[in-house]
Length: 107
Length: 113
Image 1 (tube, rainbow over the protein chains, first blue to last red):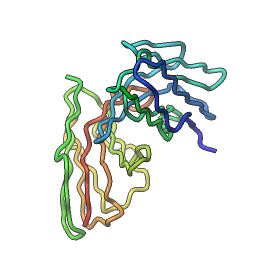
Image 2: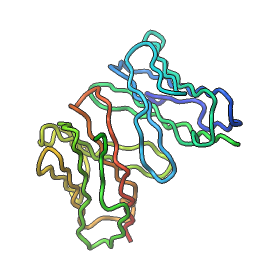
Image 3: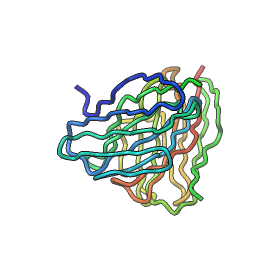
């Protein structure tokens, strides 16, 4: 069992739909990092959080430390949101990466 | 300026070549990282520099040689690579090591022939 697990692995949705990507972890962490990777490689940091909830534009990230679970939500999804979304947990001062969720938003 | 730059974008090299990858940041970050990413996999940490000193080497073969000439620059020297070393090489930086947001460069796509 991986220490950081994401679900779903793949997600296809229609433009405008509300998207939820889940991340569960089994290790003690100091913070959780959500990142986005577009085809072609570049990785963009979306959020880093250690408690509660953060919002940036149409993106919302939440974390429940007791349940060892975090979610990334996208409201009013758009084709440009199509990318791989990765959660990575800070544990013992290193990032433990999830496998990523490939999101495709169809117009 | 929240940008991490990497050069070159693409590199094709033979197994006997010597080449270098370059990474630069001007955010005043004191931690810099090299990652290797194979297709459809998450990045794998290779090296961590903290205050220009190598602090973590994740058992990377000696054909990869990192260098941090100053607080803004990070190089990865490549020599006698194998075809299985073909991958996307990503550089990142953060204010310090530990639970701080990491900022990534666009990567260098390396092909070893």
